[in-house]
Image (cartoon, rainbow, N blue to C red; front, side):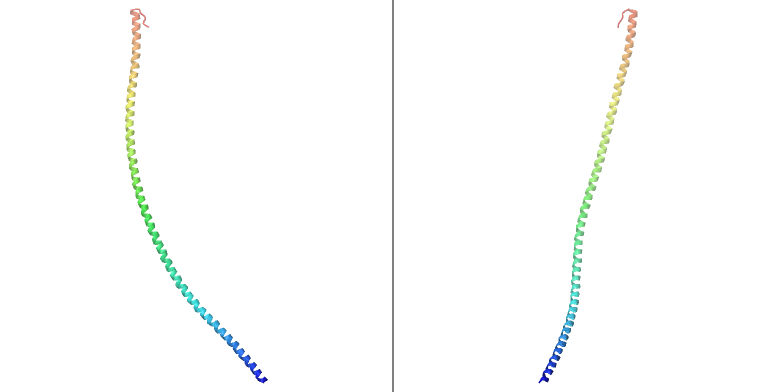
Length: 162
């Protein structure tokens, strides 16, 4: 019987070796399968990520174009408002220019009237001054005449009229 036991032991060792090599084969197969599955999963994930990125890019492009469209409309509205304001300013500028012209004309008319009045006043003052000067001259002549009369009265009548 001891022979059987060595055989049994050898068989057991062989079985163990076979089990070990089978286990190693299974582990290798599992590793290979895992790698293959991971590769397939990576490829699928890459495709899904690419698909998702494409969808996101399209949505972002649409969103950007929508936002730009809205902004363009708002800028156009603002441009219209500015144009309206420009027209109002132009009208106001024209009114101011007309008012300035009217004021200039009125000022010129007023200035012309003032010049005429000043000229009349100066003419009147010149006339008054001439009268006063003429009157002064007459008074001087009268004084001279009175002095001559005094001299004649004194000589002829002998009366001193001082």
